[in-house]
Each structure stands twice: as structure tokens, then as C-alpha cells.
Length: 355
Image 1 (tube, rainbow, N blue to C red):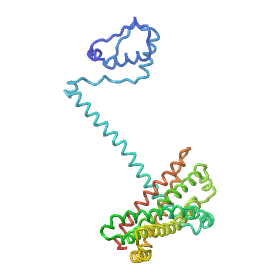
Image 2 (cartoon, helix red, strand yellow):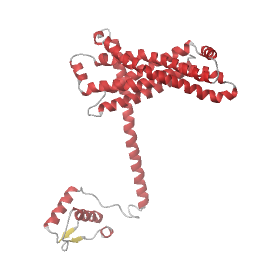
Image 3 (cartoon, one colour):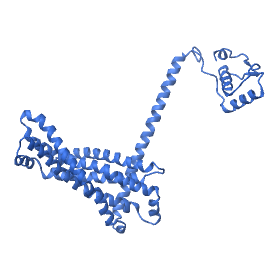
Image 4 (cartoon, rainbow, N blue to C red):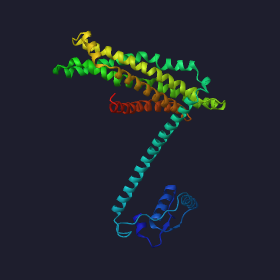
């Protein structure tokens, strides 16, 4: 290659008379030397097979200009500097090619979410005219699936969380003589935040994914298209029953988790020598009606977000064997993230409103 580059401006000839075997690798080597030379070359002594391979290689490989100039050419710019600039430009291009699709996907997801919320609101406003499409039996079935069947798991998690919170709090507070106020701390934490938040996380994992899988399977089997063809509204028949059921059962689940957590906290406090009467007195002093109803209001908001995200993931299911699984995964991830974000927004709002 260096000899071909150094022979620029002169005639370059390849003599293949003594070549016994010639394949496409040899043709590629001759074409690379021709590119390095910067001008067509003359091939002599080639047999018909080698000539045919060279013709095919020239036809398959697009015409390209000469190789980059050596150091000192191209206006005196060093080759290392030109290579560095090219590398920097390539990295910048790759960076933008990576960021731009993520930004577009995020904007599309936001637009789809807003569109789905608008369709759900329209379905609620049109519910009196489409009340026959909302089946009470479906509503009760979804409530049983989301609420009643989740009670054992919610109760167990609530008891364990109350136990863990009390134990982890009483150990560092006992040297300061403030271990009695662990009951106040756990009570406020459960009623205001953890009861609704943990119940929502459980519901996102159990029910949100189930909603996405059910509706996604219907979408893949074209059952949703059949409903539209028959003049039925999928939002009213598929989304609203699930949305209403989850909004009704999640506050009840949050209340059950709160009670189970208080029992777990009381068990730890009793193990550290505090009478149950003293613990209950601290719970009554710290808990307020505002804390209880604030947590239940958060549970209603979390339930609406989880059900809406699960149903939207199901309705946006694509085609193929992996589509339903991807929709279920998107429902779980989106439900948990939206719950945490919404909890932060509501916490700031409650603080600003002094609730």
C-alpha cells in the first residue's frame, strides 16, 4: 500500500502471469492498492477467472476517492490532528444519535399519556349515555382481583414494615430516652405515607401487570378491534371498570396495611417492655383525622394512576409474541414510577396547604 501511495502520478501495473490461484481476497487487495494509488491501474497476464473476479469486485465496491493524505499534505494539517477532529465529530454524532431517540420516545410517551387521559375523561362524561356498557359484574370481579385477593399479602407486608420501622427506630433512640416516641413516629409514617405507598407498589406489581396482560392479549387477538367494529367503546367497557375498581379498593388496602403495621409496631414495643396501654395512648396522641384521610386520598390518586397506566399499556400493545410481556413490564415500571412521583407532588402540596 505504501508503494502504491508513493507511486501517485505514475503508471501502476500488476503482472499476474505467474499467479496460479486467484480469489476474491486477491481482487480486494488489488482494488485497495488501486484506491491507494488514486488512479486506475493496468492488470496484465490475468486469466479469464481473475479478470471476471476483478470485474465483479469493481462492480460490488462503490467508487471511492484516494486514501487520506499523509502528514504534511492537505494544507499542512498534521494527520494526527485531523484524526482527532474526525474522532471527536464521530463521538458527538453518536452522542446525539443516542440522546435524540430517547427524547423523542419520552415526548411520544407523554403525548400518549395525555391523549389517554383525555379519552378516559370523555368516556366518563359519556357514561350516562353508555351506562349499559359498564357491567357491574365486571366491576365486582376486578375489585375482587385487585382487593380481596391482595389482602393476605398486604397484611403480611404491613406487619413486617411496622415491625422493621419500630425496631430500627427504637435502637438509636433508646440511648436518649426517646424510645417511647417510636410509636408516634411509626404511626404518622404509616398513616400519611407508607400505607398508601406500599399498597400502591403491591397493586402495581399484581394488578397493573394483570390489566396490561389481559387487555394486551385482547389487542393481539383483535378483540378490541371487534368491539370497535360492533360500535362498542373500549374505554367504557375495558378501562372504566378497572379504573373504578382500583380507586375503590386501594384505600381499603392502605387502611388494612396501616392497621397491620400498627400491630407490628406494638409487638416490638411490647418486646422492649412498654405496656400496650401506653403504646395505644401514644398512637392516639400522634394520629389525627387529617393524617388518616390524607393517606386515603393519596391511595385514591395512586389507584387511578396505576389502573390508567396498566390499561394504556394494554391498549398500546403491538404485535408479536413478546408484545404482551413488554406491555406488562411497562405497566409495572410506569405504575411504580408514577406512584413515587405523584407521592412527592402530593407531599409538597400538603406541606404548602398546611395539611
